[in-house]
Structures are given as C-alpha cells and as structure tokens.
Length: 196
Image 1 (spheres, rainbow, N blue to C red):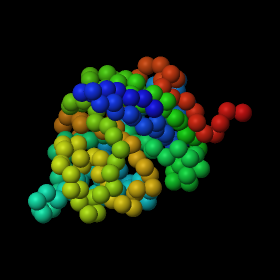
Image 2 (cartoon, rainbow, N blue to C red):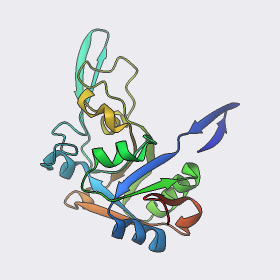
Image 3 (cartoon, rainbow, N blue to C red):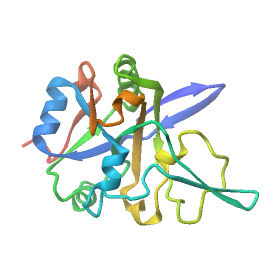
C-alpha cells in the first residue's frame, strides 16, 4: 500500500494483486512488460469471468434521467484485484497459476505514467477501484473516466482495481499495448505460490 497527500488530505492506495500465468509474471519481473487490453476485446471475450458485453459503457442517473455514455477513442485496461486471499483469487481466475503482489502501488502507477507518454496515449493514466453500480445506474456525478470503471453487480466478487489508458485513433485496431517499466522488483513480488 502507498499514499499521497493532495490539498491536505491523505489518500491511501490499496495494495493490489494480479493473477496471471507464471511465464508472464516472470517476464514482468525480469523485463518490466505490462500488457494493457483493449476494452473492445474484453467485450468480445467468451470466458464468463472476463467477458462483459457492457464493459466501457457507463450508466448514470442524474435528476431522474438515465443516460449511457461511452468512449469514441480506444480504451486499454490493466486489471488487478484488491482481494487478498490467494485461494479466492485463484478460484476466480482458474486459468492462472501465479499471483503477483504490487507492494508500492503509487510508484508502480508513476512508472506506468512515464512509460505511457510516448506510446500514443492521450492524457494521464486513469486509475482506481471499479464500482458495481451499472445495473441501477450510478447516482454520483459523472466523471469522464466513469465508463471504464463501472461494471454490473455480477462482477463484484472480482474487487477489481483498474488502470485505464485512452489511446489515440491510430491504436483503435490494436488488441493490446505493451509498456515497459524499470526495476519492477522493488514494487512487486510473487505472492502465490509462496517460495519454497
């Protein structure tokens, strides 16, 4: 976990975890490669725990009026969880065999921000926990990143923490974008299975 102070208020970023295949986890720890997936690919994924036909479409209710919003630019996301129990994570992502823990979330986010600047990305990374209020429609003020951070209630066991990047139109056909960060071993470690 890490924190930052903004206008005399301390914000605490949660510790985050990510289930993945061991080869990708090892690649991240040695090379610093972080893969972001186009939301269009997530919408078309046939796997029940990942596929979400509505991912990237936000629903709000303001003054009794229900509205839906979406992006015109491609959105690429990197997904993790705030779930800390390894067996719960592994039961949710059964095709994965390793969990990586991000021990310094803020430092990890800062490195991703720096890596995204030259990669056709518009604006800074957007980051935070996903809300599961799409079924009823959010009643909070809409913010421009909302569609990438709102899902249906059935996905709530994921306890997802997401990082989203807005790509320019040249990236619209890309399934993934890859960013390279430096020295990932001081912000992340293998959490499960534990070392012998």
